[in-house]
Image (tube, rainbow, N blue to C red):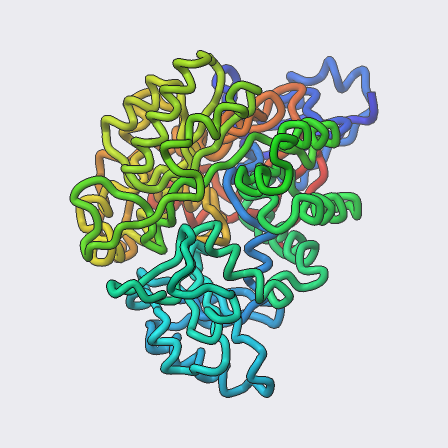
Length: 555
């Protein structure tokens, strides 16, 4: 065995229920050799050359935090565009302030149009949030800014592209075009909306040279990795691998990892619609071949389906009584009546399915699909996961548990969005019970917490996710949303460590600090178990350790 490096700490929370605390952890070859105290690990220390590292002697170590649903490369793509969103955003040129409302956004778009020398060059922007900025944009509004310069606006949650007439013509659709996701006015005229994957893809094609800039992928991954370290994250899953290119996306990850010092483990989850479009009947062969390239730091995992729209963009599918103002939302590209047959090859192959379902109507469909798959071929450890699980019912939580399914939940909406959508979109009742966790716990369903960073208006900060889950405090700092859905600090910490690892099928390697597992830690300034739960989000993150290699949060 190589020389041991022994990290000491003021406290170590192992998330191993058999040995929940420790004060020292010995590491070799990137894995944990022993954990306990300097005294308990003496049988190792007497036999193996070692050094004691007291850098964290007054800190708290926990397993490296896991965000099981992010889009780091894609979000870095959009962050290079002109920004029109509601909150400050980091861009390649520095921090860009947010815009308060739709009027400010329209004024910003007018400024961008005025600044263009070439009228054939489109204005390409990102970040609009209809929920907090005053409602959707449309073709007529954008034509008021310019009916000659093409205008293209991607929503913050990239489920809608808003365009004006010149941009519609460039995309190449007309009022007679029949395609899933084309928005229309009541009279049937195109309203400039391109909604969900297929239609958004159509809208991206004529502006691809501006969206996918040379070298943006490596730049984005490097920038977002620093964000991860500052928030204690050591593992993440990119839930839409292949959105731009399976090969280029994989190569970008390999490049940043091979350069050394990249502080993240990344699981790439293929997007079904892209798999089917590119590889057709050979898609399973492609996944098998890519899995042969898996390493501890980069691996292929599962498959992802998108089956309705977005919570912040208000395009998800709801059961009765629906939306406040009569919107209907939109399904994904796969017709719901075809869902069982479409998922079947993956289920039959034993590939874990991640099914994006934000609205309760979509969750019903997803549970029906899971039930039919189980009926055709029962599986005991399928780990079928509903992604987002934003608006649900008590009965759905119980049925999910009964079918052996799990949920990867975005709790940030409770704090950042619930008051907004009480008045805009979903109404007070559904806004209050957004991201049910207490119900899932009572039903016995496994769940984890994720951010969807940076494609929703919220951070990638698992301790903040835990704070929301424990307190369910709305953005006004006073209103507690559905207090019965709160969970304990321990369950919240499990949801961002060991349970997150289970959902990603990596609990044999990460998620808790046990002998033989990868030596991944988050280094904290306070103990989450000893602190007032109202202060969970304020715990300082000093940095991370990945495979025994420290990464400081201020690097």
